[in-house]
Amino acid sequence: MNILDLAFVAAVLTASTPVLLAGLGGLLCSQAGVFNIALEGQMLWGAFVAVAVSYWTGSAWGAVLAAAGATVLFAAVLSVGAVTWKADPILVAVGTNLLALGLTGLLMRVLWNAQGTFDPEGLAGLPRLAFLDAVPVLGKVLGAASPLVPAAIVATLLAGFWLRRHPLGLRLRGVGEHPEAATSLGVSVPRYRHTVTLVAGALCGIAGAQLSLGNVTLFAENITSSRGWIAVAAVLLAANRPGRLLGACLLFGMAEAWGFRLQGVGLPQQITDAAPYVVTLVVLVVARLRFARRQSATGAEVPANAHPEEA
View 1 (cartoon, helix red, strand yellow):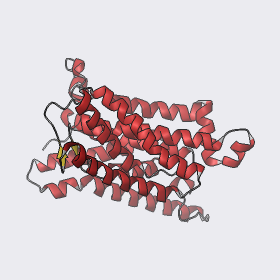
View 2 (view 1 turned 90 degrees about the vertical axis):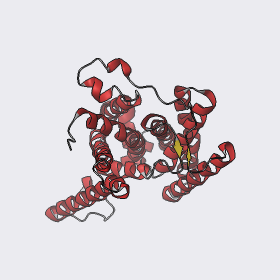
View 3 (view 1 turned 90 degrees about the horizontal axis):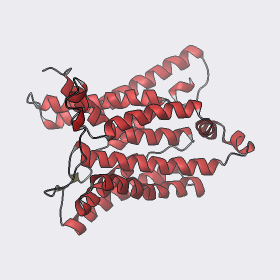
View 4 (view 1 turned 180 degrees about the vertical axis):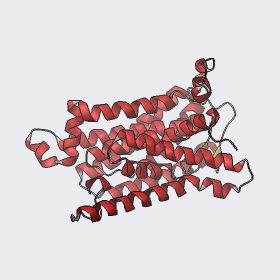
C-alpha cells in the first residue's frame, strides 16, 4: 500500500483543513490570553448552519458566509461570559460545546425530520479547484480540493507574519503576555480579547463549512468527531507559533488519511477511526516528556501547568 502518492497528499490536506482553521482561531485566542476550548462546539454549529443554508438557498458560498456569521454570534457567548463577566472560560466553553451538540441534533429533527445523517439530494457542496487539473502535480494535489484548503494554509502563514511583524499583532501578543503593561500603554485588553474570540468563532464556522460541504456533502450528528479537541491539542503543541500549528494539523490530517487507507486493506473501521486520536495522545505525551527533560536540565521551578516552551 503506497501512502506517499499524490492522492494521499491531497487527502492529508483536505483532512487537515477544518482542524487548521479551528486551530488558528484557538491560537489567536491563546495569544490574547483566552484559553478557548469551545472550538469543537463552534465548528459543529458552523457545519450545521452551512448545510442548512446550502439546502435552503443552493449557494455553497452563501452557506460559508452564513456559517461564519452564525458562529460569530455563537462565540459571543464565550466572549461575553469570559471577558466581560470574568467567568471561567473552561466552564463557559464546555457549556457551549454541549449546547451545540444538543441543539444541532434537535434542529435536525425539528427542521428536516431526520436523525443521524441529513444528506438530501442536490445539496450544494463547495466547488473544487478544477482549473488546476491540467497542472502537473499540483492538479493531483489540489484539483479535487475546495478553495478553502489552500486558503487555510495561506491564512496560517500570514497570521504568523502578522503576529511577529505588524503592530496590531505585537499588541495582541502583549495583551496575552503582559496585560497590565498593555493597559498602562493605553491598549484596551478587553477589546482585543473580544475581537479575537469572535474572529476565532468565524474561523470555526468556516472550518465547519469545509467539513460538511468540502470534505463531505452532508450533516451528521456530531460530525466534528472531536476535531475541535484535536485543534486544541494542536494549539498547545504549536506554542503560539502558526508554523508549528500547520505542522501539527498536517500530522493529524495524515493520521486520518492513513486511517481511511487502512480500511482498504481490511482493518476494522473502529481501529482506523482511532488513528488521529492515538497520534494526538502520543504527541502530547512526547511533548510533556520533552518539557520534563528541559525542566530537569535547567533545574528551574516551573509551574505544572506551564507551557513546554516556558521551560
